Image 1 (cartoon, rainbow, N blue to C red):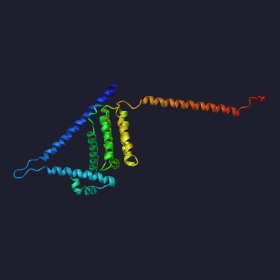
Image 2: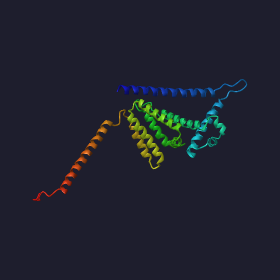
Image 3: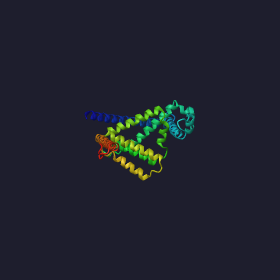
Image 4: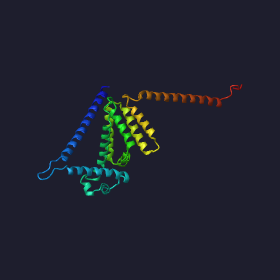
Amino acid sequence: HEEAQERQRRLHEEAQERQRILHEAAENRRRMRDHYHDRPGRPGRPGRPGRGFRDAEHTRRSVLDAAIRSLITEGLGVSIQAIATAAGITKSGLMHHFNNRTELLVSVAEDAIEDFRNQVNDNIDLAENRPGKLLRAYIRTLFDNLEYQDSYDPAQLWSVLAPMPEITDLLIDDAARWRDDFIADGLNPDRVTVAMHAAKSFVHEAQLDPGISTESIARAKSVILALTNETGPLVDVSDAENSFDDVEEAEVEVEELESATDDKDSDKESGDDPKDSSV
């Protein structure tokens, strides 16, 4: 029990540290934008916003968006030239921002992961002063993206990128990070596993099956969110295992009884008639 508490404390500290680092990174990006956008003018030349910085950020964003569209429509074999054309720039212009094709695709994946995490953080309800608020924000974000999706299906992007080992490693690390953060937020690991994967699986199924009604989606969202209202395990696994053992023992006893009954019937069929006086 002490080891579990220590692990819980450590995971909580790590989650807080990651939040602090993300906050500092966002703050640094904001300061950098302000610095470049508010450059003073040179003597004899009026000041102007940092157009070079904004143009570079805009171009990079355009390339990432074009890469997402191209990957979904053309698959993993899409060329750098095709992505550059979709972004409205030259191939050399694209290579100015990304050294090679692998770096570009990994950047697409990292951007999608960061974007989703930012959405989850924005969905945290700070009024929920109880464990599980991060997982609830995660679930709400998944279902919100399903309801208001207007650009692309994230599941399609991941299905295209998943064969790349670099992307697989990113997704494994991201899933482990989410799970650790959810547990650090005060929920039992079993409860986290069930709620997290239930939300992901249902949303993915709803994206593929247009026959799932909006009422069913809303109901599923409410049910999965309700799983996070308690902090302990969903079931006592030890009792469940014992119950399965009891069933197996009962089945063995039934089989033995049936076997014994069959043996007696066999003896009666093959034996002599007890009424025969010659016996």
